[in-house]
Length: 286
Image 1 (cartoon, helix red, strand yellow):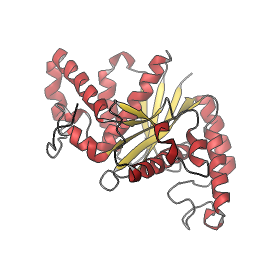
Image 2 (cartoon, helix red, strand yellow):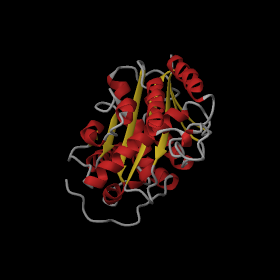
Image 3 (cartoon, one colour):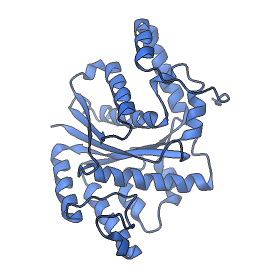
Image 4 (tube, helix red, strand yellow):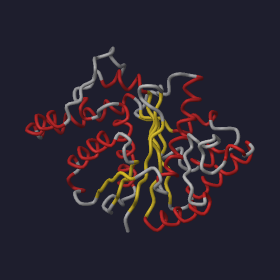
């Protein structure tokens, strides 16, 4: 049986202080159940959190009451947040990431903030699969087509080559926004991003000094209508995270070890991944 992972982004690194990549993963049979129930709830119309409640919403939610919208979002959340489905997300502070990136030895291994965020979701997902001893099954990652596709492809290809033991067991693809199972991913990413924006507005430092921060640390910023909790309940301690500076410091050391053992690979990778941060911006505290 294979696992399917659907991920979407929320926030723009050149506009927002925090960005998020989020979604869910489940085996194929659970994904089919989610797809069936989601289509029934939406009538096959496109759900997009950004346009929900506006005149652009195909569902007609602009004319609904606030409680009606909240109830509908919770209904969608219940379709996705079910047994056998894992909700996952990674958020990061853009400015702090850029500061960290400027001081890493191998910044090309991460790329700009969105690439690093996508890399984080893939990495944390793989760690969890390894801990559950199911890493050797086939996994297919799906992102929205056209959304930073070139960056994600580089990140994924690079990650895949580093983990050759999984060769042939991992795949990735890019599908249109109307793909039904990308819409629950949009809901996860958007709801988590709203929480991160609220938290950052109150205290603009999400870093707890560790490599990553559990999302439930910011529970006080979950929406009062219960939508946030309905989307991520049961997952905000183990599979929803804020990636901090120490996380990228650690991964930079992993790259250092890799290139020490395989020095012939460094020149090839520098040619293939030419990204460089604009400048070093202060030394990040250990």
